[in-house]
Length: 101
Image (cartoon, rainbow, N blue to C red; front, side):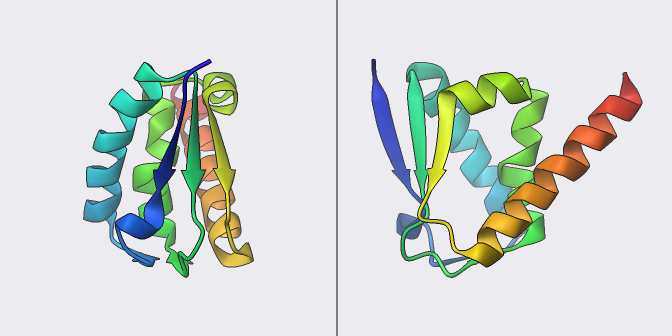
């Protein structure tokens, strides 16, 4: 099983903009595709904004089903604020996509 770790602290300790989220998502897609498991490591990251979370993570639902993402990725090192924003972003995006089907 091929596993890789993506360290978000190497990008910034504060992840706030939608533009940055898009740039990171575009880097993550080939990493997710090439590995059996991708670990998203948020150790030493202070802030993950709603905008970043939606653009970087929730929009992955445009490429993968939620079950595929759960199988191929995992989050570690999240503080409570980041965990909440990422969770909300996934819920909102999933609701939006279900309205389209």
